Length: 360
Image 1 (cartoon, rainbow, N blue to C red):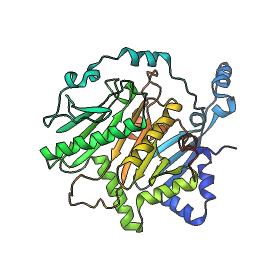
Image 2: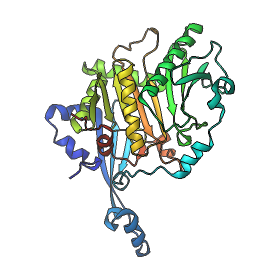
Image 3: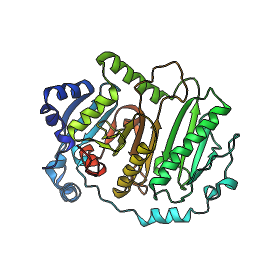
Image 4: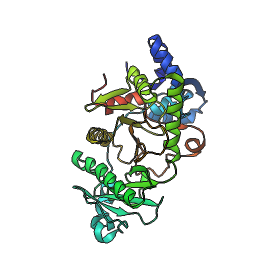
């Protein structure tokens, strides 16, 4: 019988004592039953779409809260049990093909350059973003137009080109020492241009609030318990069958409190080829699950000392599925913005799909 998120409380209770205590230090699990009474006129439709009337009339809800960061997710028995079917709609393919010839296809003449010039990678080139998020805001424009074609060498180049851009920006403005790399794929993710591209920013004063909040939570944890927040977090996920390791010391998790669907967290001591190769491996699995619109972010310590304690803060990549590009319903609503994330994917199924048999 397959393990599901509905079993989480029982799985936790059956862990060895030390692992169970570690779980309870990080996570709180609450379960409830959502009930309804459907009119007979709906019975046929319910059975066709959800399999059984009983499953709909009595729904198990699992709420998981990260007590260290106060991230939280709500898993619904019906939503989380849906099969991960894959079919890239022909309309999406056609939209991508029809967008060829956009300004990013001729980046050197169709996009502005930064004041310090462009960085040319083996599979990409940088540009300056016209409507900037911050004082330094650039793009890595991919040589490959189709954002759904991801190659290991190219993914590595995108990250390395981004770092080269960041070093150029810091030479021009040494106070901008906090680097952030993001990759939005297709319009559901917030990308305004279909052509494959990533973005980079540099900021001053302190890191972006969500990165700084994680640093502070990890530091508070280390001060309180004397161990590494990230190492212990991984150990919990591994003990549940939600964590695995790649070559080069990269650890991966199907996160228990994802911000949205199928969120994967990768981390290792420092950025480099092993991390980028792991990103590529995840994206390949994403494509196989038709998670073709996604958000990706890289968290790293500042590029120069800022007087704060970043000693145990690793290089972290977070990747999340943003749903079917053809679905006109937004995946983020008031719950995600102001309460807790409502999740339709089961972390146990995500781990099974993404780990590639590397769960140990």
